[in-house]
Image (cartoon, rainbow, N blue to C red; front, top):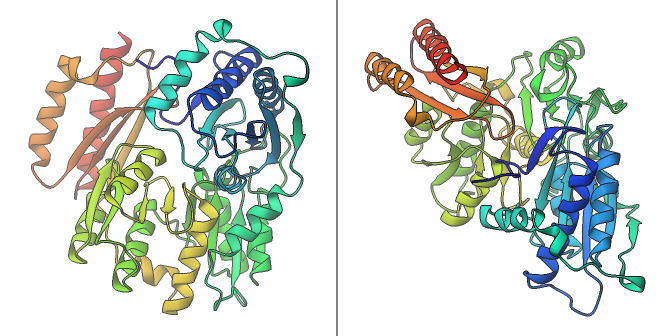
Length: 455
């Protein structure tokens, strides 16, 4: 059983366990020990190096200092890159041949929360077994040997990290294309992409209207960004923009808005991208990876194109893992994580937006025209707060109600219930052709589940 890591690193309320300064020190020590002693290093004739990046939350400074202190106490050097999108840390870690990279971010959560995610030297998020090994070290860190004297690690800042990432992202856009003449609304959620994202789009020639580019430590994801695309949609109307791009707090996911101001579901974007890649022989094999949350309508649309949909657990690292296992170069999540393994090692909201812009330019079609080919079933998602997370299969009353609901839907719908890996919540998802019916079913199942868990 996991005691520290969730589905996407360590997550919680800042300055409450496990997101505290003392936990950060101990976790820094555990991470440093793990990569120094259990992993093959690229260079053995120099001091180990671990990168630390962050988003714009007020608490990032506190966690950053704790992690740096813990890492340095084990004899590894620390390189601070400052606020940078999560995929930027992945890129810098692999590009600089560092021993590991750490991101301080709670992604799309409000500023009160924070989290710690870890990348290996290859730039990929750690597999479950590596996280469990680090977790074991964390709880026995007092038994680990610490260095002394000149062997204590140094802490330095990398001043050109943002510039390196900007060049990298721009190079994923076809060199024979530009964004000249395009009007783009960009909402950076007052998060990690607030500097680099506008720079990339403007340097490629777009006229950019920005929102969410004034972080103050407390306004990250606050009524803005990919969770709240309404403001960007209104701005698309006002400016007569060609597209709206909304990022989340750590800029690893994107939600797009077409020229009419319509917000596009992540599954719609996955579908239109997969269709284009298949028709232009750009998929390694006729398959993509999505998650158990992706709409059944997406699966049906892809089937018509001869594309198999491989489903993974929720979480972009599980999507990436399935892509690597099956040698698939495109995948994503309904939430807006889109992974183009030909370009990046993890979900990258800015790279994903550029690939969609390239499709628009190549096909000479508006985003609304591309999106209308993907027909999704109505889908209802109800989130409920829970005091604990008992195994769902052991909840007898709830399972009885699920089976009854599945009989009503027959083979024309789907029910999926799971716990959040980052919050004390359960998620009840129901999809089918009748919107009123699935809403009623979802609300009923959520009520039963909450009553049985919290009673």
